[in-house]
Image (cartoon, rainbow, N blue to C red; front, side, top):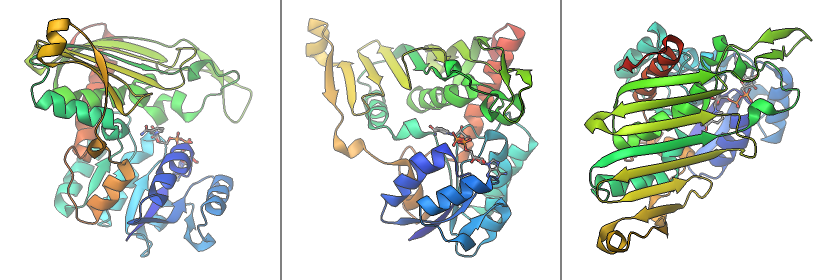
Length: 349
Ligand SMILES: NC(=O)c1ccc[n+]([C@@H]2O[C@H](COP(=O)([O-])OP(=O)(O)OC[C@H]3O[C@@H](n4cnc5c(N)ncnc54)[C@H](O)[C@@H]3O)[C@@H](O)[C@H]2O)c1
C-alpha cells in the first residue's frame, strides 16, 4: 500500500487525482497540504483526512513519516521546488504539468538529485494515459502508417471568455510561465514527442485576446502578459511537419483535443472526447477503397495515471512511463515556441 500526500488541494487534486487514488486498491490518500486554510479544511473534510494530516507547509507533509509518496498539484512555479524537497527526502514524487515556468538551474538540480537518489518520479502528462493515444503509439511503432509525413493537432477550450474571470495564477507569467501554451500546449508537445519523436525547429505566433483582467484580491485592473492562443509549426525528426493550434478562445469547446497523423501508408485520427476510439485508414483494403473507419481501442491499452504512478512506486514497470526528464524535454520546446513567438523567427532545438 502506498500512502500518498498531495500538495495543492485545488481543482486537479480534488477532481482527478484523489478520485483516481481512491479507485486504486494499492494507494491511499493520507495527507493534504494547501496554503489556503479554507480549501484545506474543505478538501480534508470531503476526503476524510484527519486534522493532524492536513498541512499548510509542504515541508511538513513531505517530512511526515506516514507519507510514502508526494503528488505536486500546485501552480506551476512551485512544481520544481516541491518536487526537489520530496526527492531530497527520498520519496517518490508525481508532478503536475508543466514541470516549470521556464528551464532554469533549479530544474537541473532536480534532475541531478533524482539521479543521485534514484527515486521514482513521474510527470502528469495525462494524455499519454488515454487509450486512443497508447493504441496509436502501438500502430505507429508497428509501421502501419508507413513513414509519417505530417500531423495536424488542435487543443480547444473557451475559458478566456468566462464572464468576470479575474487575474488568476494561470494568467500571471511569474506563476504560470506562459498562458495557453504551457497549460495546454505542453500536453500536445509531450504527446507528439511520445508518438512521433523529437522536435528539430519551431515557428510560432501568439496572441493575448483578453488583454486585461481585475486582480484576484482587489478591483484594480492589470494587464495579461501571457498568451490566450498560440499557433505553431514544428519540424520533427525525419522531417515530419507538425501543425499545432492551442487556444482557450474556442467558444463551444470545453476541452477538445483533435489529432490527425498522415503517413505514406495510412492515416490515423483521434478526438479525445472519445478516448477509446480511433479513426483509421490503414491496410490493403482501406487503401484500395480509400475508406476511413472507426475502431474501438482494445481494453489492454487502458491504464490510469494514478494507477501507473502508484504501481511504479511499489516496484512495477510500465512501458511509456513519463518520467520528469520527459517534462524537461517538453519544457525546452515550450521555451523555444515562446521565443519564436516573441522574436518572430524560426527557433532551432
Ligand atoms: N494534467 C492535467 O491535465 C491538468 C489539468 C488541470 C491542471 N493541471 C495542473 O495542475 C496544477 C494545479 O492546477 P489546478 O487547476 O488544480 O489549480 P488550482 O488553483 O485549482 O489549485 C492549486 C492549489 O494549490 C494551492 N497552493 C498554492 N500555493 C501553495 C503552496 N505554497 N503550498 C501548498 N498549496 C499551495 C492553492 O491554494 C490551490 O488550492 C497546475 O500546475 C496545472 O497546470 C493539470
